[in-house]
Length: 242
Length: 129
Image (cartoon, rainbow over all chains, first blue to last red; front, side, top):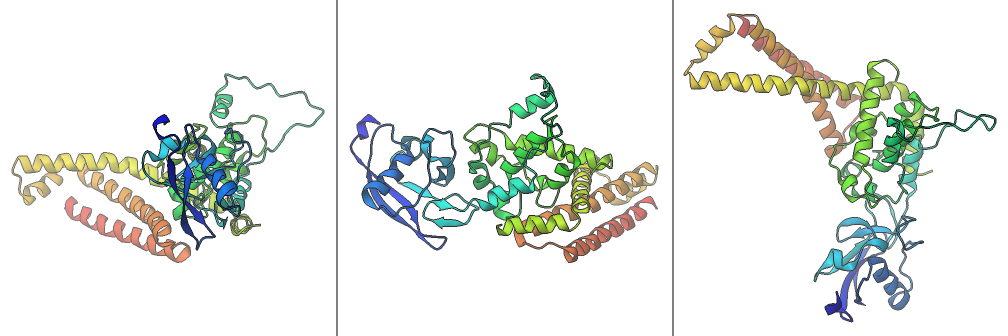
């Protein structure tokens, strides 16, 4: 990017609520500039009323996810060079959630679905019991390894076609969380959690498009987790345990 | 609580277990019928290609179907799988693309399934002679 240092980057940023519009800004372009740097520049130097979220700036908190040139991404970990080339940068709020203002969405529906999928751990032991012994190489623990790093950024949820078509669909993140707990030998929810994720809006609604898996910034595979839930739920139904 | 949260609470209050079982069985039936259809379509296509390459007339094809009850049985299985699979697929399409769901839709699709089953088995009966 050194040849473009000190040039100007044209940016379109969504302003307003769901009935808002894109507004154009010209932002100084720098080497190794992230999309979050661009948004922050506009807020600090052009229009202080621009609303957006961020916290850690290093890909740990997941709060800065936005739609960048049509795809949901963490803006703090997305270099401008990687997404625009010589074209215009376009930044919009995440899909499938109500827009509060500008680049901020209301994530209540997203987290409500984590609760609906019984995303909370259901303990079976008390403080008087010994620590559970979980073999790291066991199939259940390995399945958890593949899912546990989710930080709830909603990139997968905003990328899911099925959520767009069927707003009640629980979505990849909530189902990924449910699969994590289904594999947790310490958890006691059992068939109740399988019932929670089996519905017209549950795991069976997934079309295996794999947009969630392709776009997950943590390189997780919610599609695999959902497939696991489908198998487990089907098996429980066949055994009369659902 | 958001609208989604309210929907979740409402769903939980209205027979979570029944809905969960129904969804699971629809999934199982849809996948199982798809597996049967995959085999049936291959056999059916191979039969059609054989008939075409050997210049068999429709009368000759039907006559051969009378030789063994295995052929009518095969096509009866084909019909049953299609009668299960097609309405389940359409149910998803009308839900996601048209937003249509509920008991009226399920009843209409049940009628469609019976129509496929009845029409298909009627044709198989003709094949059996």
